[in-house]
Length: 177
Image (cartoon, rainbow, N blue to C red):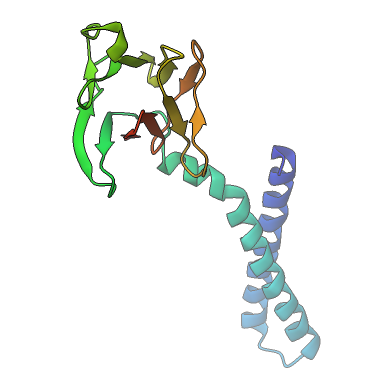
C-alpha cells in the first residue's frame, strides 16, 4: 500500500472511531428506545472494527521494522548438521575479516596461510556488513532469511548481510546473528 493510501486509510479510520465515541457518549446520556439509533450504533461498531483492522495493517510494518533491526550483525555462528552452534565469531569491534577453511571454518584478521584457504571477506561500512566471494574456485553461497534457495555468490560482488542469513562455505554453514 502506498504511503498516501496509508495516510488516507489512517485518517478515515480515526474519524470513524471518533464518530463512534461521540455516538456512544450521546446514546448513554439519552437512554432512548429508538431502534434507528441502535442500528446506527451497530453499524458504527462494525465500521470501527474494520477501521481498526486497517490501522493495524497500515502500522504493522513500522512496528515490525522497529522491533527487528537488520543492521545489527554482531557475530557469526558455525552451525552443525543438527543446527546446533559449534562455534561463534564476534564481529562487533572489527571492520574487516576473512572467512577461511582448512580443517574447519575460521575467521582471520590477517590473510590466510595460503590463498587456497581464503573463501570470502567480510567488510563493515558504518553499521552494515557486506560479504564478498574471493575466488571462483571455491564454493561460497548464501541463503537469505525467509527464502528457501541457496544462491551461489559471484566473485567481486558485495552482498549485504542481514540477521538470520546463512553463509555456506563448502559444506559448512555460518549463521549471521
